[in-house]
Length: 244
Image (tube, rainbow, N blue to C red; front, side, top):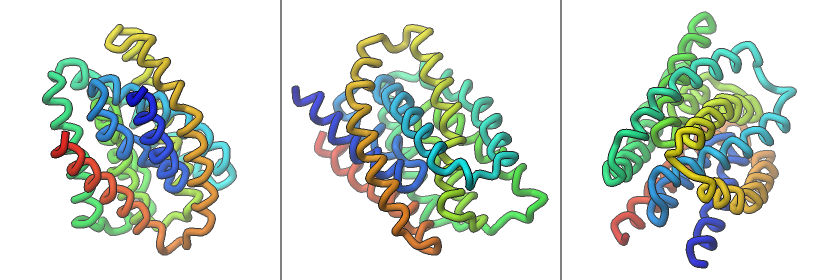
């Protein structure tokens, strides 16, 4: 019973972040869930739930999306997901837990120590494609592929709904590919899918709440919200990891 309630709490908190920013579900869910789940099951659950929430965010923000750029991002993320999944399947579970923690720490460091300059318009799609490929690799291996893309989009000065929708679109196909490969290969079983679907309502409620809050976040403050998401996830994860 504790297992189910812990997952519900973590899923609702992660959903709140996803609804607010368009990414970040896995940054909260995966490292915390890996404390009471197998790392592979934690990554799988994050991919299932994140895909569901990403679809909802895309529907909400579809009128604001730069579709030509988004399609480039989606294609690049799909290509990167496959090598990431290979890493997920061959690394020992203990190593995966360490990789997840390191990925979260690096994401926080990047947000606070690296402020990329806006790319000129002619280089924007190429830069986002590269960031999306790297994000796809991270998505496949840890489910936490949002930070590289979020950093670059934030630097471009996009509006809040453009950021949320684009990050959700980048994440959607990558998550679906990861979910399908992990299920079809037998790396995870139907019990893992059942658990993820059990936590979906909590994640959806959290996401809806985050979407409402996003309307109150000023455009100029939004990059700080993204950075704060990563920092809070890192702090909580490290504390719980040490306790565990």
